[in-house]
Image (cartoon, rainbow, N blue to C red):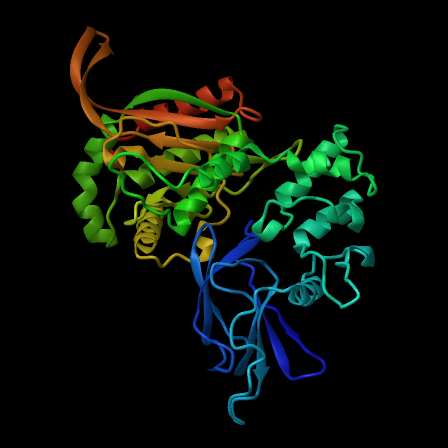
Length: 462
């Protein structure tokens, strides 16, 4: 948490905290304190949410809430000032709040927020030409997040040019996607980048990403519906999931390969040891840690599967962090991550899997629990599906789905000839980013996972 002290008054600025490596903004869910309320050190001031997890923001000083700068449901960039606390004011009684209600983020507030964000964000090393322009009354024309300003500075986009970009974010704010789209169009000649050529800028900004256009069409559908219907408003998490799924399909050209595995040895071994395992280790052994164990072994043989794409650079991850898709009681999905899964034995994997799954279902995951995944496993068989075509969890390049395990008659090849036997069979499917993973690598990796499961040692110790 970053505290910025006001030089003129004993005031501390409460900053939107950094919640994870890839998280750039958070939504305000609830204010526990209002202007004029006393607050103690580390006492909860508000609740916030990201697309991954909900969190509480504690006070970084003891005093009185002087001002809050955002409303409930506002999307706030990481590093922005969200409230001001008059420190040491509790003993003298509550002070008159600067505002009785959260301000509507006027232009004056935007100017102050941007100044504090620039001062308190280490990565914001842009020059003075990228400070927000102010009018004669001191109000800022627009609010830009530090990320957008950093991109603009590094790519040589002037402030005049930046102000002409039409934003698709909240209240017309320019997002990372907007400026990257503008830069891409400028490189291909769709816009010249000339600050005086507003038509060129307009051409770049009107070309919104496909997912924005699709979501916009959904949001602008008619308000009347024929027939006997029930209208259910999406909750916040469902909206974020929808947005991420559309973005993933827009970003990565998906290819899905399928195979099946005879997991009879694995099933019979688990059935034989599960009671002793739970008694000895005080945790259950499910199929998930067994699948992860096989995945890790194959990732070590095919490291390109454990990568991401940054422009035209392939980033191969040395850490193997396996995300496991977990269904919540609400029906929504969350993906907690098992960090350094390659360094855990089967007991360690089982405890991690059960711990994360329990915390996910009880709403006790921390922000860090969903960060840093390099490959994702989803068990579509949990609800009876034989197979699925999963959507890649960005910025990863592959996701594996395992289906329900079913008994089927299977032809077995033996030295004495073919025979038919009842075996436990399971379908596996893997979607992968065809920009990086070709069909040969994707199919080879998937087959390797299937063989790893088929060759499970049914005589192994717990």
